[in-house]
Image 1 (cartoon, rainbow, N blue to C red):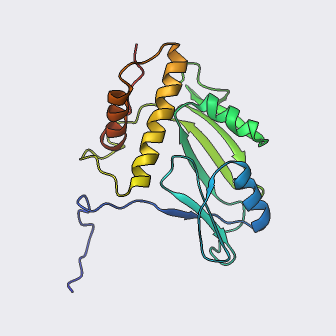
Image 2 (spheres, rainbow, N blue to C red; image 1 turned 180 degrees about the vertical axis):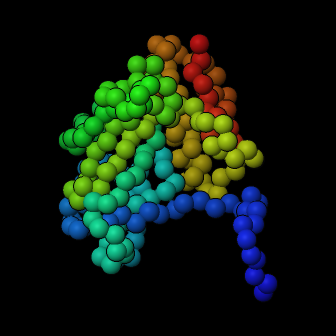
Length: 205
């Protein structure tokens, strides 16, 4: 088979990040921590532990001999639609936040962004090995962040996850606005489609 050289165009191939290996020292403590977070524990071979955050198509995995990285060296981001609700959920599970901040005119400043602009507000927490997780509020994707194309789902579970994210976003938006948003099925369809091929649905006036 001929071997390609250089950076060829892979736009016609679907390539997704599936698993990130997390460097941990104490498997039992790490397992208990991610169980407490409420993440789904996946079926894996013996000696390997894997969790998937709610609504995520990418999982984390840890186990003996999986990585040479030092425990506590990972820095990972989780995007959320409503960071205030996410903070409440994490703290409600007995996990202490190490920092809450936003990007101000001169750099990082404490607290959430007063205008709750997309990508601006973040919070962080650590697992037992001091790997850092950042929660970042993303309500509207930057141009070019998502490739424009057709909307497709590889499996029923992936579609179910997308519907679940739309449900959460719809509920959060209604709570923010203090009104009931009609035609939820059309809103779900627009949200799910734009999540794959364009910017997130913006809050209704």
